[in-house]
Length: 332
Image (cartoon, rainbow, N blue to C red; front, top):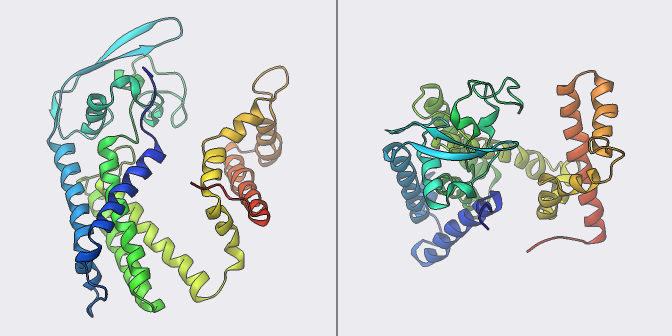
């Protein structure tokens, strides 16, 4: 219990769903049952949802750029010893790895021993010669390279509520607009608008895209892409009727929890890798990666891409299809 990680992607999803669903339930009697004519009528009908999203935006932005982050320290456990490192901060509004308010809030709320101890920032060029992969730290690597950081922490999850608000807006469009053209006009205009905001914020260096901090530009970019991609699938499947080529996506969606736990979290691969010959690296998964993908294509990058496509996505699509055929679904 002293080192358990309290946060995670499922906890983030649960909290975002809880907040968004709570607003949806509590405001049911406060919104009209039918929309007035006009492109923006759906926004005024669900003004309480957007107010909730705006509140989370204000909380996130004021905390991220206004909270003072003092110097802090942590214990790094090396091979045969433990060493304390000090990170010099004493600033506000920093959005780099060392002194951001997102990490400071998590250290204060959860405690530094309960944060993720293999953050992606340890793979930065400033930290390791193996960049962009993980590897030994540089001799002159900054102290924060060894520090834990929670990518699914409290403040960044508050920012993720904005993503949930935009997502439920796409659902509201599906409910209230019955024509294909009306729906696509709402989704595409929203998606393009969000992408424009994201590009302006990022390329002007006002708020760069940052997944680890779940920055506002990242929220706009991912929500905008989601709207455009969703519109594309809607055109192909619902408008043009091309359902059969994409039925495997339905199978995966029907057993999304099972595939996430066994596939994305590596539990199934870990089970397979538990059976090895002489040493742990001599297992079935590594053999397939090396002999079927890497050596055949003479490229680790191309081999990795093909392994993900065929060894991960295609494999789990087939598994999901078989489970669907058998009527087996893992759900809460």
